[in-house]
Structure formats: C-alpha cells, structure tokens
Image 1 (tube, rainbow, N blue to C red):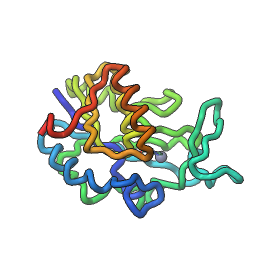
Image 2 (image 1 turned 90 degrees about the vertical axis):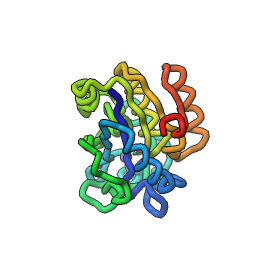
Image 3 (image 1 turned 30 degrees about the vertical axis):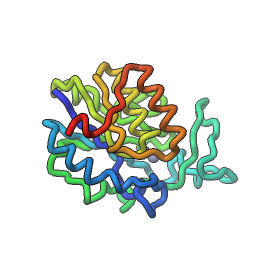
Image 4 (image 1 turned 180 degrees about the horizontal axis):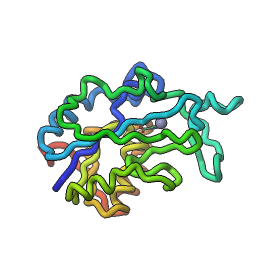
Amino acid sequence: MKALIITDIQYDFLPGRSLAVPGGDEIIPLVNRLQELFPLVVATQDWHPAGHSSFASSHPGKSVFEAIAYHGSEQILWPDHCVQNSRGAEISTDINQHHIEAIFRKGMDPEIDSYSAFYDNEHKKSTGLADYLKGRKVTRVYLVGLAADFCVGFSALDALNEGFETYLIEDATRPISADGFIAMKERIRQQGGHIISSDMVL
Ligand code: VGL
Ligand code: ZN
C-alpha cells in the first residue's frame, strides 16, 4: 500500500505571504493530479500558537532567518507564519481536499519547532502519522509540498527511520534555499531514500 503525504501547502508559504517559498504555487496543479493516483492521501498543517519560539518576533534583537541556539539545538528564526486560525495557516483552497483523509498538525508546542510530519525537531512527541500509516498497511510513502529543504525533507528522513520506502517527488515541491535542498537530497539518498520526478509516477 502506498500513500501520498502533502506537506504544508498553506497560504503563508505561498508567494506574497510571510514565509513565501519561491514558486510554491506552481506545484499545486501537479499535486492535485498526483492525488488521483493514490489510494491514501494525507496532509500536514503547520499550526503555531501566536508568539511561537520559532518566530524572530519572539526574540527581541534577533533577525529573521538568523540561527540561534535554543534548548541546546539550532533554531532558525522565521517570520511569523501559520498562526492557528489565521488565514495564512489555511491549506490553500486550490488544493483538492476530496481525497485527503486526515490532516496532521504540527508546531503547536510553543517551545519546540516541528518540521517533520512525524516528529517535533527534538523527537520528543510523535504526530501519530507513522502509526496511522502502519495501521493502513502503508509501506511506501511519496512526499510533496513545501518547503523541500525543511518540512518535506525532514519528513522524508523520519519516514526512512520509520521503515517506509520513501520517495520525494522533486518537481512537486519547492525549496526555501536551493543549496539547502541539494544538501537535504544528499542526506535522503544516503539514508536510502529516492528522489524522483513526477513522470516516474504519472
Ligand atoms: C516550514 C519553516 C518553518 C516548512 C515550517 O513547512 O517547511 N519551514 N515552518
Ligand atoms: Zn513553522
């Protein structure tokens, strides 16, 4: 059984919004076409409380995109984004939601950021996605969405750790940083993941 995981296609990650991923809107028609090919589709939603510790605005004197040490690990400081119940946190209505069976939210802990669809960045709490997929007899996962070098990439690494055969569909994702995505793809390949193009699925 295979599943498609659609990561964070929310307004704040789309052009013109606070944490816009360049070209993020371009993937939406392809993501919708891909959904038709999967017996199971799930999505994730970045869902931060106002004043989240990953926001630069929560750290006076610090700038957006600066990396700081926080709780003993590195935290990149982001513009305010995907605040619970805000318009920016909504999944784009251009995404067909008829096939999406469940939406896994992440980033609710005010003190811990959460890129992966499976675990927070300190691997303290599971979203339940791995158990959900295993309960549905999924062995192979395909990842699409935003951003390639953060939430999609870290989801792929966790999927591999959870024992799923893992495919990142490169043209159905866009990165915040092109260089960051090159490094992420290397990590995914080293751990046994596959970087593929949508024409290998369609
Ligand atoms: C993301 C940075 C902060 C993502 C979420 O969805 O890739 N990136 N929060
Ligand atoms: Zn976030």
